[in-house]
Image 1 (cartoon, rainbow, N blue to C red):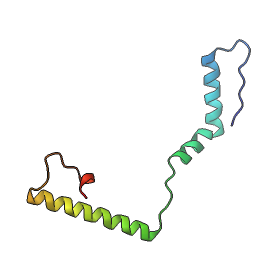
Image 2 (cartoon, one colour; image 1 turned 120 degrees about the vertical axis):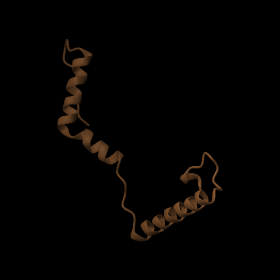
Image 3 (cartoon, rainbow, N blue to C red; image 1 turned 45 degrees about the vertical axis):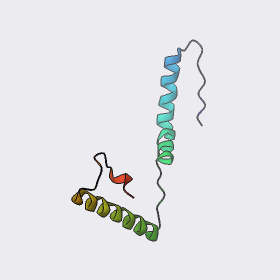
Length: 80
């Protein structure tokens, strides 16, 4: 964590600008974003199972759509 103290007579806006600039220069914002949006890699078996599950869902959706058995407000994510 960076430690930035407010200077005597410095406005709050100037202090925040200086603080954000120090965060940007230190790279802590980039590091926080990398951690926030990190997606762990899955094993090949888990990836294959997930892909097969999605393929089944899509094929079922397409079949129901083709046969006309889908409700009007149907969404592919809701088809089980």
